[in-house]
Length: 108
Image (cartoon, rainbow, N blue to C red; front, side):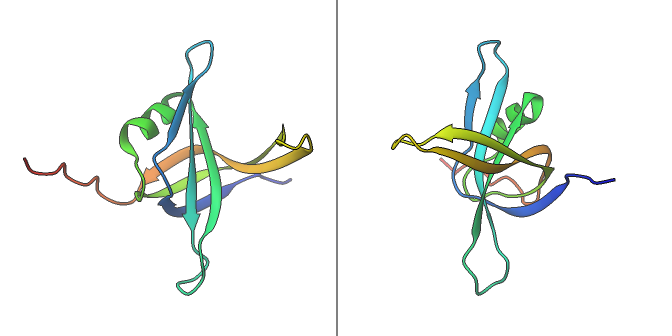
């Protein structure tokens, strides 16, 4: 028996990108910076999710926020600008836990 389970913690590299399918279902995408050690540069991991989790991500996460992602490894295909066919690897998130507190809005 084998399982496809990935658990990562890191910081969002940019605000999540939200898209809606023709049926109106939300999808969220963001890159997560994951460090292997303090003295090493981060690895960038593509994270994607759908449904209510995508709505939650879109409404609550922004660049720099720290999260714990629980999901599975996924692959897909695309055609690059030069016409070559490429394969990508991403994490399809099933759960995302916020590890930091949401920053307070600036005082006015």
